[in-house]
Length: 159
Image 1 (spheres, rainbow, N blue to C red):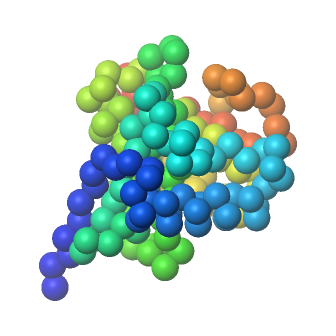
Image 2: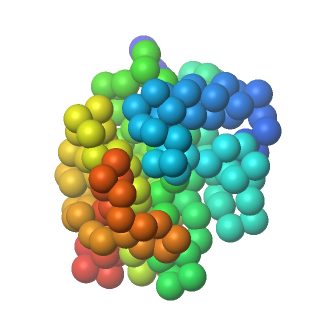
Image 3: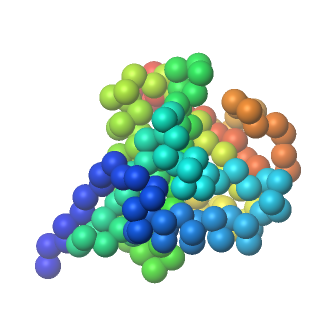
């Protein structure tokens, strides 16, 4: 059986995107206090400095991710989310590889991310570490937060 997988740029206002964003925001709100939730809503994901993507498997959106441009020539990985029922299928890894390739082709010097620091986020942290991300201090507009873990991948060193 052949599986059709496509990752395409999308608008966060599309119904499938809205459903994924809603699930992502609900999960983040359940895992972190409000002041430590940095997930973007649909207006944030449709901002001019953000490129938002959906991964569809056999025509159904099962994962999302975005890249936000940073002032220093880097970019931030945002809103990585895979539907719970699709976790373990490789969709998250495919989205991450796509976004890293996109960042490289856009000439980014590094990719940064913020994720949770609690045990709930261990699978995400392990995924990012497997691609060479290392912990770093807060970047951009972030500040030190016990609920947040900051990571960086130097694309020049990883090339």
